[in-house]
Image (cartoon, rainbow, N blue to C red; front, top):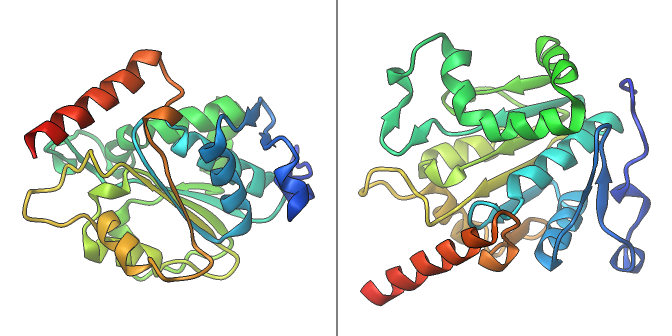
Length: 242
């Protein structure tokens, strides 16, 4: 087992017992507790299914909980690697406009994932795991042809994948791997004529069993109280225009 390995909090409970138990994940630096029903269900599904989708606005804990589950899986020797993926599409800025090598170009897009890892493992330990390729940054465009075995895979901002990219990503899963796909369908930065792979896959897999889907809303936001009001205001404004 990896240094600091411990028994998974989620793994100790199953069935009816888990419903009566506080849902939390113990990481070396802090304990991550579920806040609200949707976060509880999200944690439970990640512990149960090999493929999970977290859909909803920023600030609902989608990324943070996924990273906590990945750290837990790594330290309890359920997986050998954590792989972080995020489409490099942000408000019209293309990957090629950024300076530096490939890793330096991709890093800014993965900052929320890194920040969560630093909080749970410490920056020095995270850097060592990256150097050993136990934590890997895998640009979406470079996944084609790979099979990701024994890995906990997190794709953030998946609303910015195309249909072909989403299909390619999901078919990279290998033996002993699990994946969490997060996104916010109200924050799509793709060109207007390009359908979102996240929106499409939710329809394609709607009848597929053993896949977890949690849809968060503004009531699940755990940031500043104004964030919830801002999200609701945008939704109300959008609805008034339709």
